[in-house]
Length: 263
Image (cartoon, rainbow, N blue to C red; front, side, top):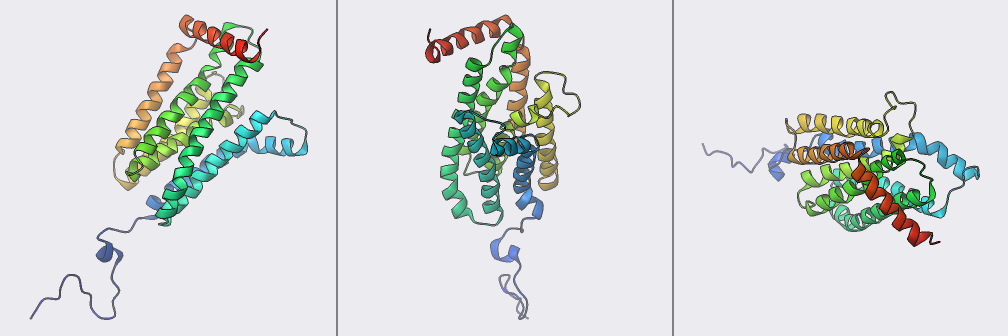
């Protein structure tokens, strides 16, 4: 008796997804993990900023226009990540790629807004002691790392497993200001590590669990992203309170003051 060809199925039976595509269908965790991470990031941002939005809308919490623009850009960045993750999860890759080109541009505009807000802080807020300059280091950490992850994610956009993991790092880096406002969190006495440690936990623990469930090991992108994150945090920790950082920060602030507040 002749054998039935491998690409045929018996009458009345549907072909499986694997027999048609040659690939196993993605599990829900593979498809929607990054959507969930985006929603989780928005939830983290809303905890401290939600009440502030209400106060701003009521007119009881006035802000300068620069901060309004920055807030709008950061909100757009989080929402765009959720939308892009949703497009990828539902197979709308053409739309994902089209929107992604604009998303990359938005990412760099978000980065510029981060730098502008930090520069404004150095000019506007009084600095009465050398230790005040150390409080600027978390900002340096964020706007130094953010473009590094964004550029790497853009370069790796043809490798989806790398691209989506690196993009998650950009999303959670943008949440530092939100976590800094969560004064009720335990172990928030230390100046720098209070947001950094919580953000590490919020980001790295889910990423590790996802990798172990989906590929049974840490993905190289997760390893590389984590290594860069920890290297930057170690560098900031070593710079904290040093003469070299204080000297640089003092001269940098003087330059900004001479440009924007000339005597």
